[in-house]
Amino acid sequence: MSPDWMNQPLAWLDWTGVHLSPWKLIGLAGALLFGARWVVQFWATRKAGRPVIPRLFWYMSVAGSLMTLSYFLFSAKQDAVGIAQNLFPAFTALYSLQLDIRNRGWRLPKDTASV
Image (cartoon, rainbow, N blue to C red; front, side):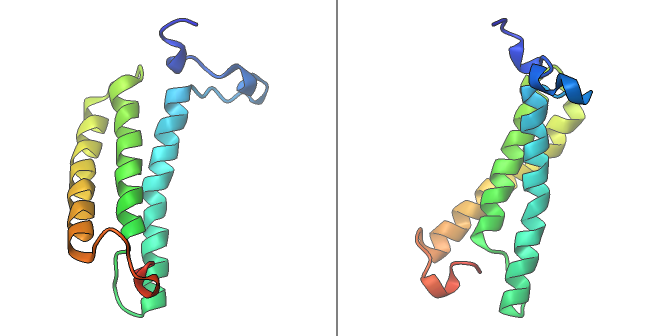
């Protein structure tokens, strides 16, 4: 395998006409994960009857930001705008997750696990 295999289109998708590289799949998965965190936040808020941000929101923020950031850093794309757009949210989410763990503990009680 050549060192650039992560930027090459996946052969098993040739029949579809879709040209996705492994890096593009990582970037798309990160963007979907980052966007889906709002569904988690909406569900937790609706369940609690008040605005809440569940810990899962921060995990999804960290993972989605880092996946999308890695796409912009390491793929052939190497887009400075994408790097800047994902670098700050990654640090903010990591900081918020660290604060959440520090304030509520590592293991949440069962009745507050989703909020």
